[in-house]
Structure formats: C-alpha cells, structure tokens
Length: 127
Image (cartoon, rainbow, N blue to C red; front, side, top):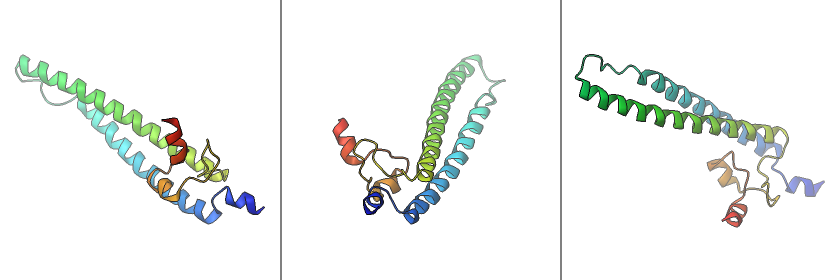
C-alpha cells in the first residue's frame, strides 16, 4: 500500500490541482468567448463607404485577422480539452504520473503546466 501512495499524489494534493485546473478552465473559456466575439465582429468593420482600394486592403486585413482568431480559438479549445482531461485523471487518481516513466511529475511543473502528462525527464528523452 505504501508503494501505491508513492506513485500518485495524495488526495489533498489532487484537490489543490483540481481547484487550480478548474480556475484555468474558467479563465480559458472566458478567453475563448472573447476570441469568438472578436471573430464575429471582424466581418463588420465599417468600410462600406470608403474607397475601393482601401476597402480591398482592409478586407485582406480582416481575412488575416479572422485566420489568426480562428487559430487562437482552435488552440484555446485544445487547451480547455487538455485541462478537462487532466480533471478526469484527477478523478482516476492518475493525475501527475508521467505516461512514459510512470514517475510523479514535479509539482512545480504541474503548477505551470497543469495538463502535463510527461515529466521533464520523459520530454528530454523525446528530443
């Protein structure tokens, strides 16, 4: 039984990580809404009555902005999904265990990257 405890974080630690991750999910969802609302507003930027040359330039800029916002939204959605998967790992009590080495991921790393599934050791082995 003692060995099992060593290969996972305590329930107290898991609860702290759960709170941290939930806060990050809430912020990420808020940020995603901001990105989406910016994306929705991109199509109406008030150039209806300007010269055709400027309008063409501005439309090109709007397309770039829409693409950038779309990429940001996709990244943000993946981040939220990764955080939700981390919550599942907390429920399963497998959170914080490196999927390559089976060792515990450093707490400081998990605080900075709460959805991490690899220890620094395992990441370095991948290089």
